[in-house]
Amino acid sequence: MKVWMDFLFSVNGRQQQESIDRWVREELGPEQLLTDGGQAGIDGTTYYSLRFQYDHEGQWHIYRRLKEAGVRSGPTYTFEFETTEWEEAPYLMLLSSGNSHRAFLEDRGTLVTLEPACEACGVYEQKPVTPLAADTSVLRDRVLVNGGAGQWVISGEMADWLERRGATGYRLEPLLHQGGETESQPAYRLVVDRMLPVSPEQQFLYRPGEEHCASCGKLNRIYFPYHLEKDALAEPADFALPEEPLAISRQLYRPLFLSRRLYEWAVADGLTSRVKDLLSFGERDWLVHPTIAAN
Ligand SMILES: [Zn+2]
Image (cartoon, rainbow, N blue to C red; front, side):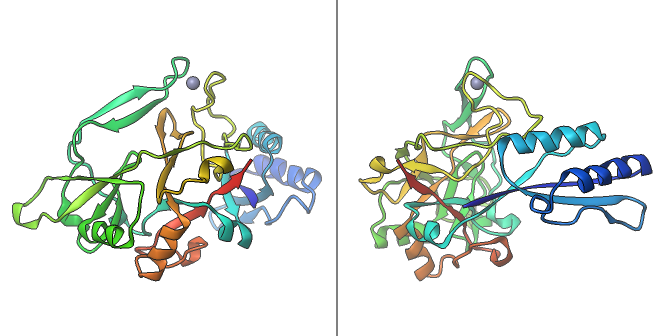
């Protein structure tokens, strides 16, 4: 696996641009700088796109240098997996169920409770205490949609498919339809109880300049491919969640893991195409990343 960090930013003003150009020229070796910086736009703004292989100290260094030059820019991260990592992944982590706004279901008044997870920083996990409330008619022919806050919703068609295939590790909770009476359609919240421990090798990413919590490490913790403890994978279930959640600011969430066999069934039965990069990510494709079995 390779991890890239991209710094995208623009400068407007001669002094700032000269300072950035000097830094790029003098300090960044060609092996670090993978795309050329300093593309001038027509409005006098200069756009930079710098790509580096990730390392924790390195990202802070670049962040500070940019800040000194008056630029506020944090990295975005891209992961590049080896073929063997795709083939050997015990689970595929679901990032999205379609390159379309229709892959998201709007909440219509689900009651939730916020469970605090750290006294020091106040991170919390949101859990529904009533059935998910939504207009089920917007699903139409979609089988899997994101219901927000780490919840996934499946159609009646997918519920039948899971049963036919003999999938394990889930329960279904019917949605509360909020919309026109005639237009409701069967839809269920996918409830998954199986939690998988992450390996001691697991690391997480933290963007420079964002607040962190020394006590729990969860605040602003963003995604890094999951390394799952090998021994805990012996008893298979087709759906699982990680014991260690991710965070959007203070809100924690757990991404859904699909077993490899479940993903292969979905590809074979035409529920999704096999997507390995954003270029081939279609309107109703499932975007997944491999997880890695580790000691
Ligand atoms: Zn904390």
